[in-house]
Length: 356
Image (tube, rainbow, N blue to C red):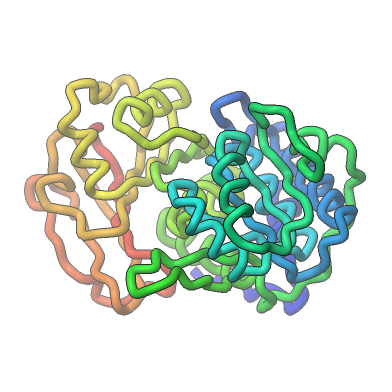
């Protein structure tokens, strides 16, 4: 596979909009409160971008993105990219002290937050002097204060705008490291980075199709989850299942049965917990054709479990990572590093499922 290089002038959000221009009525996102078509997603991205511009945000200024997985997360992230504003997507399980550091370190000019997380954000903003001027709240659960805006109203009341004329190598978003060696460090990713991971991994390795419905246990604020549930599927016109709550076995099983995803992304620990759970759905109850694992080595006993048999596999890894290769017979699932490093940017094992 030899994808074309994106042009010098490149906006990834606009790229996704153009990719799905003929899919206006197809379901793009399914979350805990409903679904959204590609046409509606396009409209909301453009209106959200218009709202950011109306707030006075300028190109390459940062906004903190502290949201649970939902269609609003996708709209906020892509709306910011579309406007040339840089979202700083942060882990929703951190402390107010962590967010205070990130607000100060990133010099975020605004914050985009889920209603359930607003109290923690407010606590963080009380701990440190920030440059945040406005807060946009997704699905608020309490009355909002001055300078806080309900995201639904924010989108509805603003006018759609044209995309910012960003560059392929221009900063698009930040993700923070875990801080295992000190304070978390903001890592800057470009507009073009999103394109290449979707082309080389989403299409080139996973072979995602428009007919797929995907579901990721990893949340959108992780690099793994961002590709799984946003950049990869939306680049091919697939549908995405999003879940705000923690990916417990029971919560995961419910989405697998209710929404019938064909592709699931997890990690070895999660797979182990699901396989050991007595409520594991029968094969006839799910529609999975492919499971992807990342983050740590996939144990042989999990990859070869009778209830999660692999008939064939693909794998991808950067040069410093080890990847699991699963051959056709589950009983002989072999673990080995790839013969040739992939150009994609994740460590993972993709298992085509013969049985759930």
